[in-house]
Image 1 (cartoon, rainbow, N blue to C red):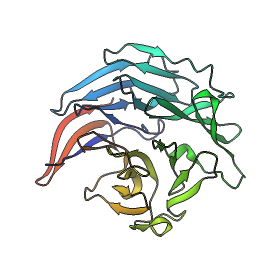
Image 2: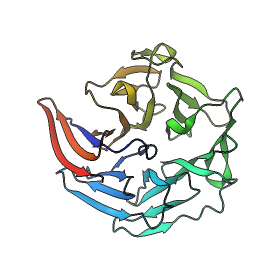
Image 3: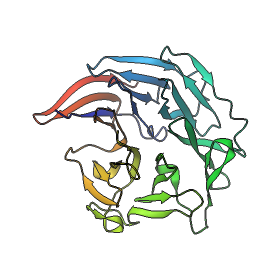
Length: 295
């Protein structure tokens, strides 16, 4: 039986953006950020919740860890939005800051990060200049847009993921954008006007799409689909390689992040008011695995 695991993050929205990413390993453990308390967390398939690492001593008082990525060796990369810093965290909770000297951050801060295989990508924000840059290792730049330019989008309220061939998918302005290396971004699905509609490409509608992921089989460009947390619609949307958008049956409350495990398990982070709840959605209904207060 294929299960849909829903991770519910309920925290005060006034503090900052909710976490952009969650991740699942081959054993079904789900990793997420309790960002109000600056902790990296793990919950098992049996609902056992554990603190992997406390990042409060590493992150500046007014910033929070919002983005994570799981490496093939089991270590996790964690970035603190609004800081130009990121850390590698082992399964034993050992924290080591990444050396970003080889990255041309140009005074910007890490807004989001993603891995494809062993290759790291970072979305860098320049708040004062109102500029966004998408970088890969060896300082390769895939995207550089500023407010007022034709390609500018407010990427603070979105996320991105990367396919094996290097194609990047970005969520911003109620749309999913596709960026091929060396090419300008094009709209893959959705339109600027928010709504709720399945369909192909720009005929589909989203309402504040946020986090996204590739499914376990690779997503567009591979053999399967891209999953998007359609936050204001309270749904998870699926997009195939041709840009056809469909909706998963589970109804949610402001989902902000999504991931899949290798066995096809779909995991969702949902954001509400002061508690983390872990649920499993089965054909028989919804089952709660765990609840954790965030304050």
